[in-house]
Image (tube, rainbow, N blue to C red):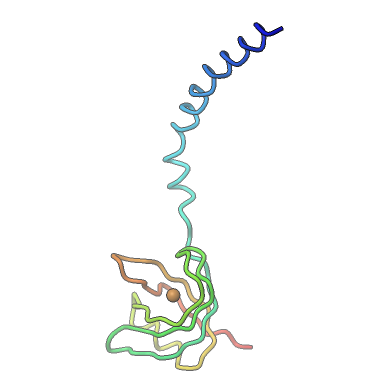
Length: 112
Ligand SMILES: [Cu+2]
């Protein structure tokens, strides 16, 4: 009995790394395919600065940036985005960190 248990453990120990390695071989492709898309997030516009391509948002939690709700300044990728919103608007937006700067990719007003 004791010998059988020891043998089983030995076989599992051999199989374990082999299975992990086989699985690991597929990981990089899977990770790229499942790269997180920016999460649409609710916010209130506090300030729009079109000449500087910046917007101040009081935002809810941003899942893809792992950032809790706060008021902060974002860069915008395209200044034309700022034509669609004004201070005081409720909006839905997406953002990503691009070259170290938190950058708004999309933004649209949300009507109550
Ligand atoms: Cu923030």
